Image (cartoon, rainbow, N blue to C red; front, top):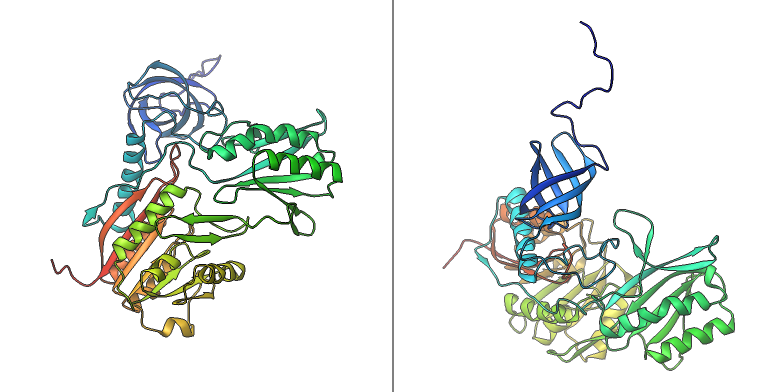
Amino acid sequence: MTRLRGKPRRAPDAPAAVGQRIELTLERLTHDGRGIGRWHGRTVFVEGGLPGEQVMARVVRARSKLIEARLEQLLQTSAERRAPACRHVELCGGCSLQHMPQQTQLQVKQQALAQQLQHFAGLQPQRWMPPLIGPEYGYRQRTRLSVRWDPRARRLMVGYRQRASSELVEVSQCPILTPVLERLLQELPEVLQQLEARAGLGHVELIGGACPSMLVRHLQPLPPADIERLLALAGRHAVVCHLQSGTEGLRQTLQEEAGQPLYRLPDQQLEFRFAAGDFTQVNADINQQMVNQALDWLAVRPGERVLDLFCGVGNFALPLAQAGALVTGVEGSAEMVERAAGNASLNGLENVHFFQADLSKSLETDWLKVEFQAALLDPPRDGAAELVATLARKKLQRILYVSCNPATLARDAGILAAAGYRLVQLGIMDMFPQTAHVEAMALFVSGKDKT
């Protein structure tokens, strides 16, 4: 057979090339909010697209049957599309859903959770509960900014990681931050650029709450003039400035009379002290709603014994104790256990005790041998497969699971369902508006439905 010379034709079933621009119409949304369409018989996921839109998209990854692309041009626009509030949205890897109205974002998140539950566990709740919602912007109480010295340009870059890249997008605006932190961010890059030791900075963490703070990590000693500049910045924005030595890990508070970071649960009139590295919820409004919902769903009675696993600084444990439960809080970090116990003392609560344990491993401890009626757990993204199996063997009546990952929630829900627990009610919590991140609360009850 004679071969034809010249440039070979692309086979009809060959994938698109990375960097290629393709035109298509989007039909629906994925579980993480990307638009889905078809191009030459292949499924295409388009970041930034909405159903009903005709788009020109650039391919970023291509396989035989699936193409991932990024929106480059709108040829026909959905009536639902909103103008993003942040001017860094094209580069920043953070808030990918700003082009969607809030109601659509909530639908995407609930559908993602429902799909994971069906896929991993074959489950659906007896009741879907209304989502917990709060402000769409101005909600985030803490953020970590990367700082990078450019020796060629002799300038400091301050910002967040770019989408799918290790490069930085320099920011002086972040509308999801609380107003006090965004005002601080607007001035921060200029002040850091003026520091003599700017080439040796690590990162900067901004922390809101009742005692707003700024933590500056530095890899070399800061001269007195630099400390004065940071103090002046902190004074202009009424925040406390902390320094952290990158070599020794030591922390220093520049304003000696200032207290440590603090947040409150106004409905319970509780205060929580924490350190910059501790895990705390970033959305104060949703956190208050979440605590209220947890109390409502668990409906603890005075004298009931309740486990609070992954208890942090006591965010759930203290309100449960205040409601009359005998609470045992457990956390992996000894430092956070100490702060949780301090918070109980600060708020005058004696019916709560805290222990340190690695909750990713099998638990055989004295405090677990006590008979508990209920448990609340708020695990990290990896979930808590072994732990929920342990709770199921102990035959607790009620288990409240607070999740930041639908996939591991679904997996762990399957374990509980196999042990005879019913998924009574489930709802999402919009802890991170403008992002595809899904937080949820699920209530499991042992035994058959008696209603």
